[in-house]
Image (cartoon, rainbow, N blue to C red):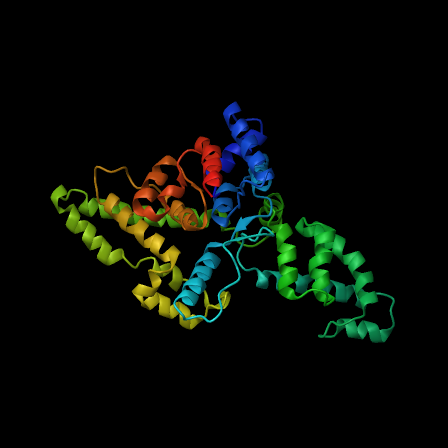
Length: 392
C-alpha cells in the first residue's frame, strides 16, 4: 500500500497530540492491519523527501512524522526512483530477449533501502574510520614494526590491533554521526576486518541511517554537505508548473472544437517523453545487469521505451497534463504536480495507491491501467484493503 505524504503528516500530528479522533482511529486500524500481516506500507524516497522538511525550531514535528513512517513501514521500502527505473529496464529487457538473466531484485525491499545506491558514501565513511583506527594503532605503545605497518598505505594490521583500536575509535565515530556503536561495528569495522563484503556492510550501515528518525539527525544535523533531499521534488514541480502556465498562456483561448487536434498533437510530441527518465540514468550507478548500451537502446527505440512501465506512465501523465494545462477552464496547474508524478511511478508496483482527490482523479484518467488501485480518500483505505484481500 503506497501511502500519500499527507497521510504520514496527519499521523505525525496525531503523535504530537494535534490530530482529531478520526485520524487516531484510522491510524490504529492501519497498524492492526500491518501487525496482522494483512497489509504492508513501504515508505519511499519521494514521501520522505516531502515529509521531512526540517526546521530546528520545529524538530519535534519532523521527528513525529518520521515516527509515524517507522511505525507503519517498519523496514519495508520502495526502492529509489532511479533504481526503480533501472529495475524496470532490466525486467523489460529480459522479457524481450535483450538480457539473459532476469533481475532478482524487487520494487519493494527490506532494510529500509529507500535511498540511492550508497556505495561511494560507505567507502568514504569506511576510509574515515579506517584512517582513524590506523592512526590509533600507530600512536599506541606497540613496537615500531606494528606502528610502521599501521601508517603504511596498506593499512593492514592484526585482528587484535584492530579490535583494540576499534574499542577507542568506534564510540567517537558513532557519536559524531548519531549512530549506534553496535551498528558501526557490525558494518564498517566488519568490512575493514574482512568479515563482510563492502556491499553487505554498506546495506547494514545504511539500514540504520535510513531509519527516518535517525536520518533526521545524521542528514540534517550532522552532515555538512548540501542538503537537497527536501527540495529536489519541489524544484521539479516548479519547472513543470512554469511550462504548464506558459502553455496555458499560449493555447488557453483555443476554440473547444480544436481540442481533438490538440490532443493528437500532444500524443505525437509527448508520446515518448517518458524515455527521458531512462536517458537520465547515470552510467556510474547502473545495476541489475543494465548497461550503457541498454540505456541507449531503450532511449532511442520508442517501441522499447514504451514497454518500460515508468516511461509509459510518465508519457501518459504528461500528455494529459499538457491537455489540461492548455484548457483555460481547467484548474490552474499546481507546483505539487511534479512531486505527484514521481509518486505515481510507484502505482504499478502497488496493490493500492493513495493520493489526494485532485491528483487521484487525474491519474485515473491519464493512466487507466492503475485506476482500480487508486484510493482518493484515506478514510476509504481500511475497507479497500479488506476488499482487496478478500478478492485475492
